[in-house]
Length: 325
Image 1 (cartoon, rainbow, N blue to C red):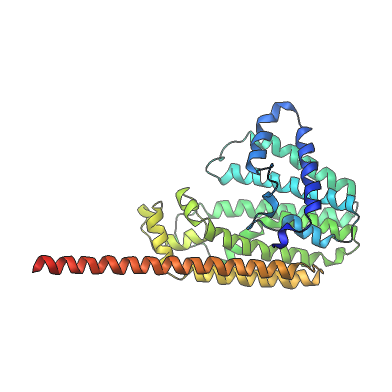
Image 2: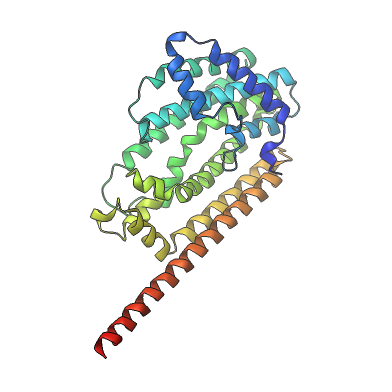
């Protein structure tokens, strides 16, 4: 059983609170609330612990194991509210189905206010607010830098170090962990929080590029992986899913991305150990197995494509010889 289904009681309590929170908003944004409920599939309550979900809430639960339950649930709700605000903003900026639907920000603004308000009620630590402001500005700056970088037209120019800089847009995830450290009088450990979140951002960013490759190509998006593949495909074929997938499988990009993602998870595990996250080794093992599974599937796809190509070539050779005879 996945480590992300642990703490079911805490997650249920959180979902109850989120439902109550959404019901408290003005009826004039009911359409946006209904859209959010559908987006996160609220009835099933699996959004935060689906198989490839980042462990956003679980990091807080693992780090805050010694906090009293009421305090921990407040921090968890703040985490969820801030995350949903960011998802709304990101989807308005990038997702094909919701790009430009700025009315969603009216709901996002309410989520942001309530998330910060929950933190303000619980955390008075001065350094927490100063460091958290830095994390928030890191999120804003990295998101803007990534968008500017991806507007470049030259394929193959999105370097590895640039990608890792852009992955710092996940710095928002540091804020609830910093709150736990402040409440647990361990704020001197904050550097490990930053490094843990940064490494997880790289690991999930690389994995998302892989699993979302075909969808991102269809949406004409430019990711780190798509940029690498475009360097080997004529520009007029960049929106051709089959051509892009063939180019992806013809080269070693997948192996490189999987290796980099595994290394990032291993780096994150070292910082998690410093922070005393006892459940993190199990999480890391599950993520590494997931990456190996995806890589095996990619290998099978490559072998299938190679065999299909060889079969096609042999059929063409046979047809030519038969015609000649």
